[in-house]
Length: 390
Image 1 (cartoon, rainbow, N blue to C red):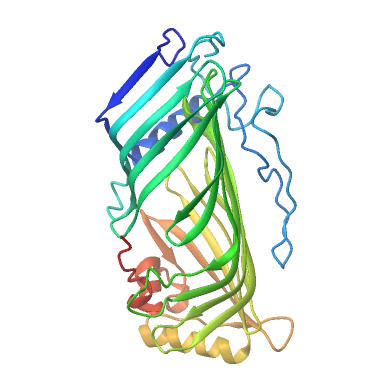
Image 2 (image 1 turned 90 degrees about the horizontal axis):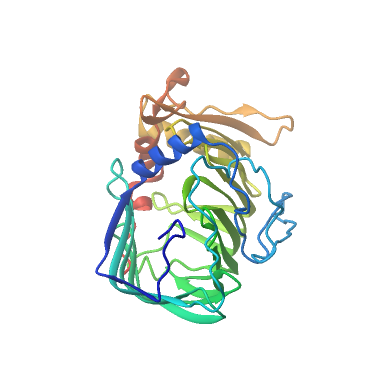
């Protein structure tokens, strides 16, 4: 059926329960990465309207954008990171006068992690009708509940679809998720490999976390935030997916839940790149009058990870950070060094995956210590105690 040898007037999916772990997906992607060859002809991944094809940032977090319509995909040919070995059959382009419908009832999909039990993404109560083939038609898929982990849940989501010119699309669909206003655009083309493109926009808005932290002050507040994330690849080859995400913000304040103080950043930005081999945090920065944080790093499909975080502070703030770290344990140290200018000091913190654990070099004598447990102790457990949102 997926190979194009079967067509249908009506396909009904009733009470389908599907689950897959991130570890299984990593294994599939790793196998495809080793055996990848030339991409099948005519199956360039589609892109949603106006994705960011090039992101250039300055210290203020601006960007330049360009776009390709899903009906005007990039030229055919070899494309790094988007190839697959298997020939999944002929193009799925039937005659325009043949129409089909996919009916979904009471189904469920869950993505989870075997090594991190608290992580899961789940869609419950999937229902709706999708038009396939033929002339232009519309349909809709409804989700009874969407859950992220055990604490965040939204109910009653709906996604209207349009079938036109061999594309199944969601166009600029507004969505309210966990207190944020989002806009989703997606396009799936029924051709060899099933190329798909997804774009998620976060328009300029204030990040209000007060609905989540009903009983206490949120640990962070953001005056302005905007973001655009793009993902594209072949459903027939999970290892082909590539993407990028650019986020910029202003007036970011970290509210210290231990001593009641605030750390403020006037502006910041983050550029993250996804490829078949892993994810790269190309440039993450937060700039303020007293403190600045700069970071880059990577994580591979095979589990390797490394990052460098540079903290730049005024002498007074640097002394405060050092004392706070040393109060947690005499085995920890956060000594700063003078920068070129006398009114700034800096410290580079290195983070690496070692023997299956994330470690960082802030132990005495630059010894490596567990990253997650140390950060939780330094920032305070309350900072990470996220209440349920249902």
